[in-house]
Length: 261
Image (cartoon, rainbow, N blue to C red; front, side):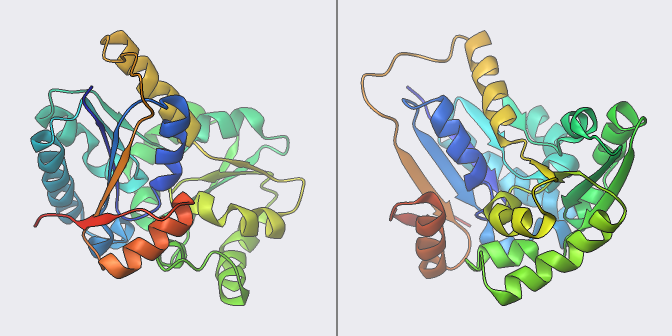
């Protein structure tokens, strides 16, 4: 059975990989962390498109049966380009504005994301389609991706950076927060503690896994493997750091290979 390719600007997409593994326990998974070029949220659209092209080509050479774009910024900027280049299903993540708008009690939701995602036409389209009956507060969370990439998931420095971006949303009455970057679920404990028990956090990763299963089922690409699926990891960044951070976030020590240039 062919593998599924999953990629992100760095290690954040492991939050999506985790949900894909739960949904498809017998499928082999290939994960690319483009940490050498993270964060995408502060890069130009042309740079992001070039990286998506390169990773898409890597997955095509690996003959994957589907690609999951586990990066909100890459999805917003270049997913249509990737789909045009691919002969397999491409499933993308996007900020969960629709479920947040449905869940809010105060009528105010906050979207935590990178600057590039916040500024994208894709987010504007989501707000126009699903957020017109509520107040949508967009918050670019500078520095959060770097915290996760370095494995700083707790501590005084992490709490200070998270609090700085949460405070304006909470002060304006947001009671539902969208984790609009796949790195941010790894900061969930800090975010939840600072936001308080009356604020809901919405992570779109489970919905991505469900959509992947739907797309594979529709194409009859899901078989009945007799063994558990495997995971393989590549990184464009420091392999020493990748081994440590990916191992900590994935919950097991795993080998990581350098992504071919």
